[in-house]
Length: 86
Image (cartoon, rainbow, N blue to C red; front, side):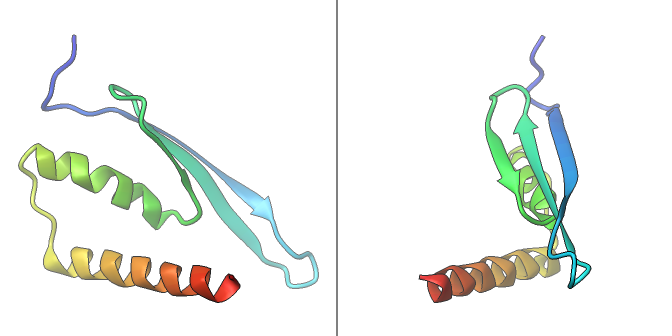
C-alpha cells in the first residue's frame, strides 16, 4: 500500500578508480525513488540529500537556510565548471 507520507529510496554508491598517479578516486552512485521510479545518477555523495530534499519538503519538512545556500552554491559551481569544459 502506498503511503504519501512515507518515501523509500534505493541508493547505490561505488568508488571509481581515478588517475593512479594522482592517487584519487571518485564516488559515483545512483538513487531511485521507489514509488515513482524517478532516478538520478550521482557524482558526489551530497547529491543524495539534494535528490531527497524535494520529497521531504512536499511532506511538509523544512530545510535549513544554510543547507539551501550550500546547495545553491554547489549548483552554481557545477554550471561554471560545465561551461568551462565546452
